[in-house]
Length: 427
Figure 1 (cartoon, rainbow, N blue to C red):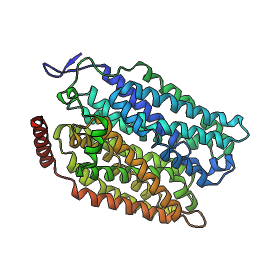
Figure 2: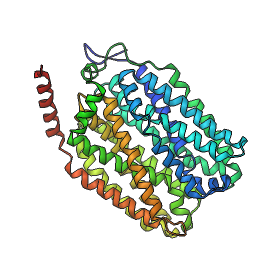
Figure 3: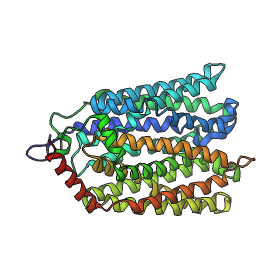
Figure 4: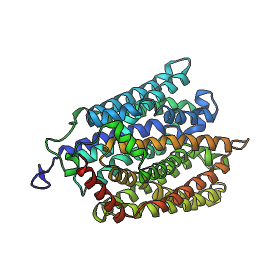
């Protein structure tokens, strides 16, 4: 046991909780982006067009919403353990259905059913990092913990983007092997969820000791919080656009002469550069507490990267610059999510962390649906997505514009203190 203060304690078990949440989000990413870098081969294997494979991501986003409210309620009233157990094991069940499709005469129906099963319980794990960080971790490590648990979503994508082309090898018959491999990995990663505790014996910080307001009252407060609404759109548009960028990575470059392996490499570069930037920023911001300054700067890198990606994706002789552009997209986009979750939790108090973080995660699914549908509408008759790459740059530019209205760190902290004092004086 480690002493945080004379009254609050940090427990080693917090790392097991973080691992379980990390693995749950890692599994979400695997099943979400399984076919992103091998879309042409997958569509041939199941006898459907490429948009039908892209639609699996659309199903995943749409089916996020039916149980989202229930997931937030479970997280904030029952705790992290039941939420993680629900999300993790139903997701594994979805992966099993995808593999079992090989034994069916209508395999695509099994693939869709497995996708929907995983998507319905996705909010149970996706909304957990902010709550777990607040309940288990200290003040100076909370953003780092939140960052690690949240970025598992994209680290899982990085793994499958890189490995899928190696398994499939542009042979449609190997897609069943890909499904089997992903199921086994996800089953193994589900094991840590069986051993986590709901909450520590004593809270790690004063904030964790405070009792949050009731769920629906918290939702109403968030709807009237202008800074939180701004973060809703910043996080939603930025990360929703990144999700679609990863989903369409092979569709975006293969028609212009690149390969599925190139698509996997580009996705991997974007994700790994973003993870590296996020972890470096997390430790810095935990110390300096300048979260809002960072969130104002990062989107401009994403705009630069998306423009570079457009001008290079259409020409195979610009491969090195395409890789650089992909890395800049990740660097500018990834850190936005954990920072937005932390800032959203702070400016939303006394609303529960699960509610504030969960609604921000919901914004990503909502925006991803809209952005993906626009991308398909912009698709050329020959299937090329050059116009969609321009659309990515437009969305990232909108995000950069919105960050101008984010309040400075000092002003927001002072406002939060004033509101807390008013709440204490209210009978």
